[in-house]
Length: 263
Image 1: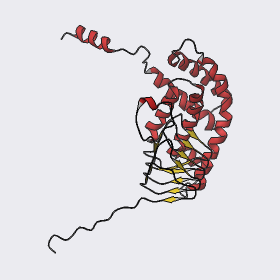
Image 2: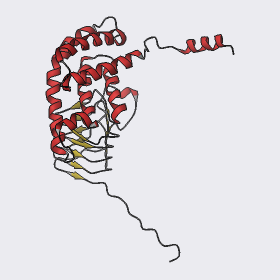
Image 3: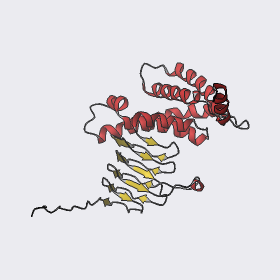
């Protein structure tokens, strides 16, 4: 096959007219600047908000393919939410300082804790998700996922003072509801019982009530599953049914002692 024929075949199969990877790169730059604007003391807020608006305009041009929907108007309402997002993120950081005896300072949480970074990008993306801004919120949380190993869908609903410890391997699905003062450890999955496209608009992921602690590698599945307030879910537990408030759930290992071959 000639090079010309190869080029023609490749072009024949490039079927997505809106698939521009520059959108991913620009979203990552926008996400980084948002984070710095909210937290970095040397980043001038007024100057960076103008920069962010310009970046958002570029995202609108790349991501808003529906000509009947004006995504440009979203920026005005979104930027008004940034102070409240920052207030809630400060609560998340304080929760981590209070929960983790290894934390030496709140500055350490902001700069070195992957759980806090994943929560921050989730909260910033979630507000764009609620506005119906296409694709960009998902790219924002995927950027955090790649850096931290924590996968929080921007559609999830997460309350105040959320603490993620270590965090690697955590998955929180799109329709999950996590209420206030919840603590989650590495490897936890808040997922769906079934994977089927027709379930897109249904609640597929669990609800976690206030003051719940979920330890490492626990798996909680299903849209009807509710973990009652003040409960503790032990490591490696597998749950597809609801748990009443004030419960403690343990995974019980099965131990078998191998007989000695020469006994």
